[in-house]
Length: 202
Image (tube, rainbow, N blue to C red; front, side, top):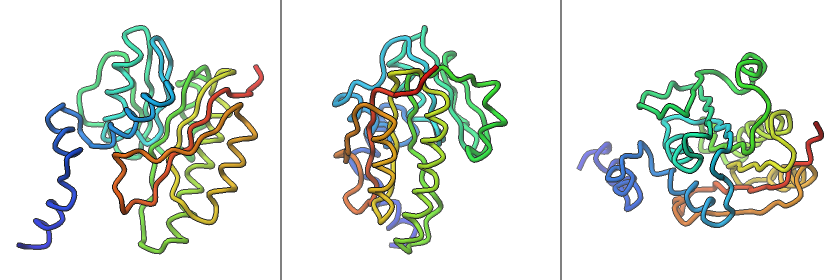
């Protein structure tokens, strides 16, 4: 068996096969599904901002939850190439340049979700620091666009910056929980922070 075949077999697990069967572009949809089942983040009619939205699984799932009266906006460096429902709008760009989107996107969202991950090096401290920087950017965006009482769900790599980021989130939201989805790969260092009750003042 060649190296590429071994790699394909490694990642082709139960969740990957399920995603393909249910026509989601990636297995990551089941992480959001688990968060939704436990924390009821997304409701009918909500406006959702999805940071790091490509290839689009979270967009599709969120669109089902919000229904036609809701709206999902997605941003990613990589373009979303799948067909998305009419209540989904996507932008291709860098979240570190969010100001270039902010006027078009608006600032009245019920939920900000982020499944962003950095390009990894295999060096734990470097990768966790890069993840922390992405999470800081996501939190800053959430602070600016969430309606009072809104929710925030963000992936972060576990590392020395994790507690610092968790403390930041706690200072801006009424509740903050740490969540490791069952659908996360066992070897993965990723974990999610789920925060509800934005204290943003209008």
